Length: 301
Image (tube, rainbow, N blue to C red; front, side, top):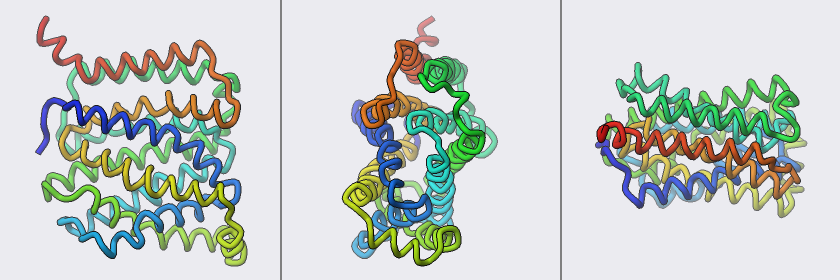
């Protein structure tokens, strides 16, 4: 059952997700120093699912919803995103471009969920979009240095993220009250075998074995972070928010991810933050405030 207003706990959960996902892109880059995109995906979701599903009961949902979410969010979103990062997509820029999922979610929510976004939602997202554009334009490397392949793959990952948001909302309507943690744990098992098959097809059997056997601390900690924090914890919190609130209210929180992502990339890889980027970050924050509080402001006018 959807509620109207977000509680203080909801805001804290959303903030935790933003910090975890914002740092996520740096962790992915570190993990792919010794692992291919498909192997990183296979290990991430294998660790997120096993052995946890041996102790956690399946959520009270039809299996098709669990499998659909796992394949779309796991193989679709992260298969494309990992590949984009491998082909030179900067970590900070990836955290920026993938936030177009918020716009894809709004566009899909109207016909598929019959959730009509209100005027202040569109105004807030428009302001946030301008903020994202300013951040992109203020990058020291410049957005023009993104490869077309990396950009298209990241945009595809954003679309897959939006589709997974819709799946969560549809599933919550079909079976309200299901356990989000169990949902994330069990759905994480769905993409493991496809990721492994793609890794063998793309990389070859011997290189796959060599990656696992030669995995260092950096790769191991990256997989642990991605599995436990970015998948089990963050996606459980995100799913809880989506089951309680309309997609138009939840999706815009992800617009804060590039603020953290750009800072994390600057700390890890020396990408410098310019004053214009901080101006863009302020625009993102203003857009989020309008999206969340604009309705109350309009009702008082």
